[in-house]
Image 1 (cartoon, rainbow, N blue to C red):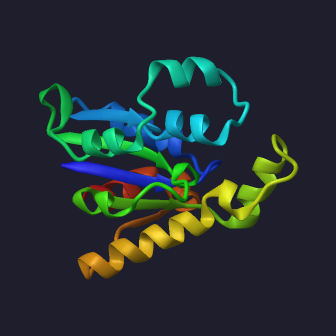
Image 2 (image 1 turned 180 degrees about the horizontal axis):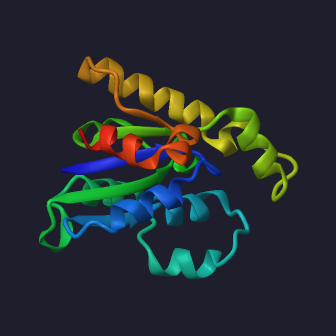
Image 3 (image 1 turned 120 degrees about the horizontal axis):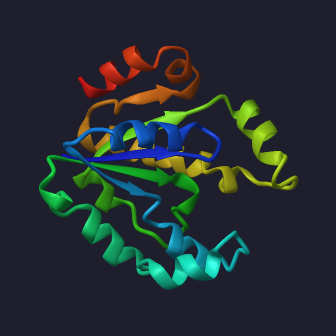
Length: 167
C-alpha cells in the first residue's frame, strides 16, 4: 500500500512521518518532490544545491517511482508530501494510484509559525490552494472523502488518531 500524506509546512508532518518510520513494515519517503521544487523555483533554501544534486528533479520520474512497488520488501510505503511542492506544471492524476490522506492545521496557526521564518508569504507557499485542489480531485475521482487528520487532534491524542488513520 502506497500512502501519500499531503500537508503544508508547520503541520507536525515530520513527527507523523517518524511514527510511520518506526514501523518495521513501512518504508518512508520524505518530500520526494522537493528537489524538483527547488530546481524549478530557484529558491534559496538550506542545502539547496546538495538536495538538487542528490535527488531526482524530474517530477514525472518521481511520480512513476511513487506509484510503483513498495521498496525494500515492505508492505507499506508512507510518503510525506508537501502540497506547495505541487507546482502548476506538475500533473495531478498520478496521485490517484496512491492512498491519499491529508494533514491539516488551522491556517492562522500555520501563518504565525511560518511567518517567523519567512515574513512575506502567499497561500501557494503554504500549499493551501494545492491541498484543496488535490482533496477535491481525490474525492471526485474516487467517490469517497479521503482521510483528513487535524494536527491538533494528532498532538492531543496520537494513539487514537493514528489508530483511526490505520483503520
